[in-house]
Image (cartoon, rainbow, N blue to C red; front, side, top):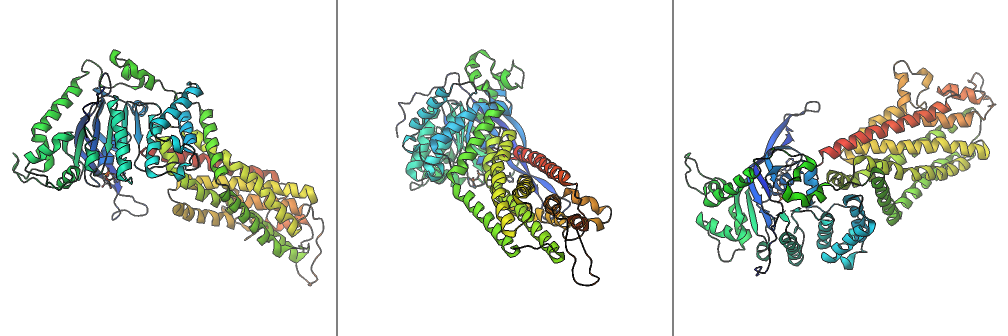
Length: 628
Ligand SMILES: Nc1ncnc2c1ncn2[C@@H]1O[C@H](COP(=O)(O)OP(=O)(O)OP(=O)(O)O)[C@@H](O)[C@H]1O
């Protein structure tokens, strides 16, 4: 292909350089670790990798699988979470992560997004969250529409994201990153999973974006020759994260020839280059050992040319302080044009909350079958547990029956609501943690939106459930009794959602979360008053009931029922104990008739505590999560 007509726009743009980058992650030493004693060791992923990417150029990072392409891309885009040594400079200056996030877009390898929105809605939402809060809506919409046209997505703008093809999905991800028109663009494996036509359309688009003046860097596995030609420069990594070559892609073949590595005519060039990266070029180095391909590059003319370029970047701002923070970075006169990026203001907390709630509502509206199925299941449980208790009688035997039934009503509600959160929240988490990591919104608005979105269901469904259980089993108190009965059931459902959030935000997998919740629930159940009378529980175990939502819920519904019963006939069996009033029943189980307020307060306290710890866990995880 002939690209001679392209006019690279390199005026006053951003040159990215990285100098001696070494990167480590902590790995658990499974052999020497025990349940209580976790042994960690450092694993080095990159070894002193340096390079330069200039504006107007499209650079490919290539290498065999596991060589560290994604790690290098994440490190130079300042999105890597781990130990990093070395410098990443922009126009010769250090920069903070915050500035890098504002100046750059990162298109991840895995297309992670919630699939319910259409392309247009998703782009509009992202425009709301990414673009400056003071921009008029018309400006934002205009940007979205022009990007849809530019990326060829107009025809599928009303298609739900979950129904897009791989190529369209990649373009949407690219479009989101281009909303703020960043001068630096990073793409992790943009062609993975695409056919050759779509792959070349995506890379052609990236080249176009580069020649408009951006600095574009992609990691790419082994592109077809037509695609490889689109890259101006190439960075080659050998396994273990060492640099084997950096320079013009056109010159790579000559360089490899100079090492005595000749590409057979039938070979695709990129395939040849990657296949050579594991080769040790057997030539004794000055230290007397066998020089690797990486050592050879350091010593080569191309390696030295790269060294000079790097040196130029290092000395570019010698008269300036070494580290610039946030907005001070581009106060130099030639870079004033970047102030528009640095002054991008995130939308206000409540705007973020509003749009996150909007997305959650859309998610529910577009997938009502999940909600309906859960409701149907909950109602089925109501029928299942109440039918055997039809016609409950108030006598000595009936006491146990009624208590057993009240126990089932509360326990099923708590399990239903906590487990439904356990299983839905974790499926969203990878998307959310990445969006938070990319600075789209803060953890606070997301977590609050989750708390709010769970409330309507926890308010409405328990009313229907209570109606079925209350009237089928024939509980006491008429309409007023029914309304009173709903209150603790609703309170239990709401508290259970908070507990579900706590478990799923704290544990990384559903399986671990479910496992960890078993002892918590068992202990809570033991001290709910049904398995043993709470008045018999010895010190210090008698305090455990205050941590149990089952205790609060069952005590509350028991008080509401038994306070209506003034007389219970004694059994005909001579000498059998007789519990003659509702108050005596409460006493028998260790409940206190005056504690109903305390029960609701206890449930409220568990709700607040669970959300507080859940939120802290969520923030902790969002800080650990890499944004790529
Ligand atoms: N957070 C991490 N913890 C432990 N090891 C990691 C971590 N991230 C990356 N690695 C390891 O570092 C090496 C490089 O990973 P990276 O994803 O950068 O490779 P890659 O060249 O992009 O591979 P691929 O082409 O398969 O995507 C791999 O061996 C990988 O297992």
